[in-house]
Image (cartoon, rainbow, N blue to C red):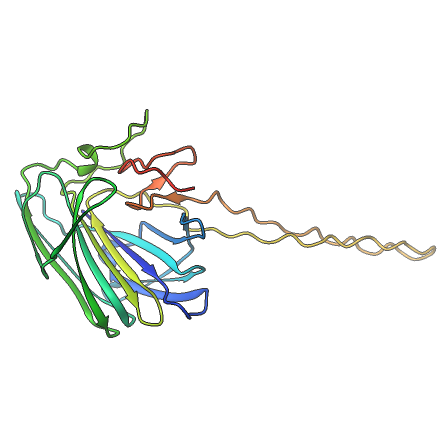
Length: 272
């Protein structure tokens, strides 16, 4: 399977929270996670709603900050042959100022080719090589496509071979083969910036609730006057405790346990 992650940034001047809706093939739903980035750069889980429209699954959420992301698994990647091809096709629901398409080159891959060509090369903090390109000024409804092919003789995952910082007794969450990562980033005109990442790792579903109610002052009891029945006791305020915020790796998006200091997937030091 191919893990597809949309990462976005709401454009300056857009009122927050921003109401956003995206869609992807319903066969690959529901999303594995929906999150937003807080002021410290941590990714926290975010509530969302879904609706099936034809063969598409729409997800809607309210982004309280400018940065957000969501992800799903595209199971169309065929791993039966050493020659592999992946095709991504979508359309942007919003006008895009700058769209960045980025591919993580997994270890053990040969003859990686992409359409459109990804001419810029860089090395990430995970020591892996990335290729990317930028497309500017997309109108709402503009198609976003990526066609890539490569050869790989094994299903060994990059997470199992890349150099990482050792952490004891941390089980791997990766079970699928292929191990390719693609990133699509965009700044959407007046609304958001969108990034998309794909990679062959299994992502556990996470809690989608991150809310709490504020405490209100408890009113004092008035002194009861003689001969009058006591007034009804005021109801205590209702308190809903939010689940612990889930922290995601800022480098690859992997969910972290509360005690983790390093990402279980890529070994990056977690931001808390």
